[in-house]
Length: 449
Image (cartoon, rainbow, N blue to C red):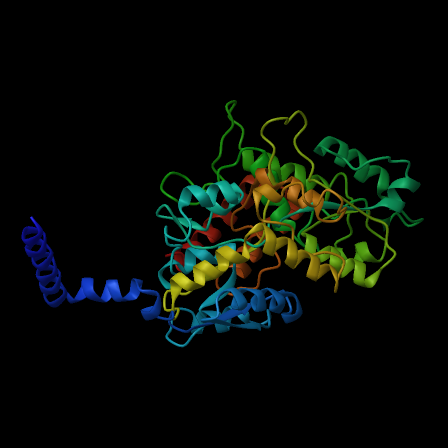
């Protein structure tokens, strides 16, 4: 019995030795599993181009990540927004270019071929959609994978002068467009010559009204306009209501009221955000980061921020308009998987709340949280709470102001500006809308992949 056991043992040893000699891959894997043969992970250096956040906000998080991942070095560089798209276009997807970049959401459809999608091993599509707001699917999702991880949720909110409201006897901001229309009329005052002395709202025109195109996009979306048809072609001029009305025309007719029969803005004034900061405009629509600009000019300004008005009676189909930036990874990154692992880590609850706290040490507030499970974390923040409250109802399209891109965003803005000017001057809304749609289609044909 003992001899049999010895023979079996010798046989197993010989069999193991043969496998050791014949299967080097298995041998290597076994060696790697042994503690004293454990191989250190390869060193990785990632170049990260940021845009709005200064180094003092980002660097503490980079330090923490690098402590947890000693093999990873992340070199953060805050780029100049004035020439950002030109430099990005020439370097993205090229060896030696940036690995991680912040881009505007509308740029993603022009860049898919230069970007690496998020690997399912880092984050599945299902996990992504549980974590972040649905608006990210508009541009970040392509062929059922995502190409960007958001560190913010951003768009339009109603920003108003609380002192002017109090002087006019208005107790609270409008929640629907009829209330808004009434408040704008009350808040618009004129001098002895009949010229506007105080603007009730910056609406109705394109000239000098920041985010006029976002406002128009939002009104169209709230009215049920479809921006593209089933073939992906521009269709915002062809959406028809069940009773035969053109939904885009209806939205523009309401917008143009504030520049014609119910004028609440003087197009000869300066920039609408500057005029608001000067106390001459009661209501504007702004993304959160522009509030920082107002506060820097008027630190003691009594600013109110509220969710955007909705159509009267719209209890279910509420819509807000997003205009935001997102982090993505170059296809030629030195290690795309490691880059996505870092961005996933950066978008986790602990890091986002830490980033917000660090930002508050140098300015009034940080970027509104992009995660759905942080929806109530800013309940005490009067400036950013409305942006997060709108998280689930945001939509977006290429109508986004404040984005410098001479090939894409700029010509679309110019087409919409011409459209509004034509409506104010001639009143033919359907013709102006159709002309804008044709121009926008040409711009998209020349840019989208």
